[in-house]
Length: 295
Length: 274
Image (cartoon, rainbow over all chains, first blue to last red; front, side):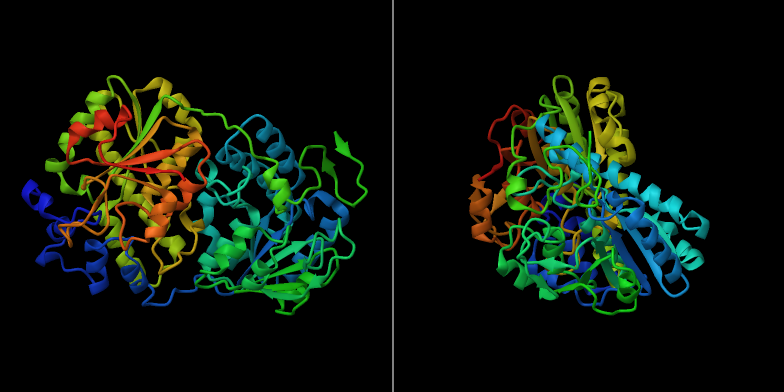
């Protein structure tokens, strides 16, 4: 048992060196010098944190492509948009592994609108958004069911590599599973991390080959092209350039742009118009068919 | 209820219909008062490395103080992962694991400590709740029991954000406890550590370091201190808080401070929104 004396002698800041020494004494040597520093040091110390970049991150699923299908922009259009895309996904199964995420769309907007009026906090709106993106994932799943493609919830992600290996694709709901822990936005109360972000983070953590956003516009414009016909198409931009433009509206969640700046693996995403047949195939083949955003 | 689709989409009529949720003006329109779900409950985060890893000497006294507080207060207790989390980070980093995997791994350590605390608080009817049901059933638990325990981690797991520097997950157990408290609109948030509060430098390395009894998030950001006794992301989270206006860092090795902290007294460092 640890004596109170050794405890009180330790670093007052969390990550108590003395306690660490007690747990990992001479008989329990740590694997690395960094390990010793991590046990004894503060995880708020920038110098120590920089040391954790010493080894490169492994690419867990380097052959997989994360494809996010828009909610309002795509699934809400029904069969006219979805059936051709589903056929295109099926055609690509022999050549490409796909982790298919779904957006939420107009029902989430309804829930966010009513929820805001009723004073729901951001975390509760996040739960509501998750339910809608799950509905869309279930529908996409049934459209792909005859290919043997499963729908997986976050708790089933350990099976993802097996399913990709066996069936080439999985469907998941795009919302990150933050639920009540969803951080507040700076302005308003709509969850800042939604389905674009949840899909992006899967591409980042698994070291995926590509992150493709399937929407109903050719990519990024200088304004919302649905409202402003003079909006200019931007085929390629860096995160910094987009930030400098200070656009009122952007084609992917701002949180994706912010996260890309610090990404270890996924430093480029492409937004494509899935209403144009062949675009998804070309994007999966690595071609530039929409807007490529990079950091 | 559904709108005729003049843009090829099928909309449900609502205040946000057809709107881009990425539009700044649309976002501002959703601001307004927020319902406080648990306004009489308190969130208390019990440090892993700072308290529980110290074993009986550091944990039993604070457990006694928590037990006493439970007679009059409703407590939501979060736990840290402590030294086991540091160890799994070090092995994981050596093996090249990405940030999201490190976050996923660390949940197990805090959960282990939640079960340790739950064992000690069992006589009070306070136990560790499985993370899968914790958030959704929390108000029910708070009616049924004097308190609950959860692993302080937010459920970010594989979906943890890339860090600004290095690979250590930025939303750890302090941040998870904070986010939960903010969403449920609790009365107070107390982080129990093994120091009296915030110092201008790590007081272990610089014994004469200036104690900071009170500071705002903006001031703390500006000071850019080399180390903090809590997750740095708390500064950002507090700045965008809608319900919480402050948190307090309190020395959990001085168990007598818990009761006044819950009563809103200033016994450690108060970090204010602003």
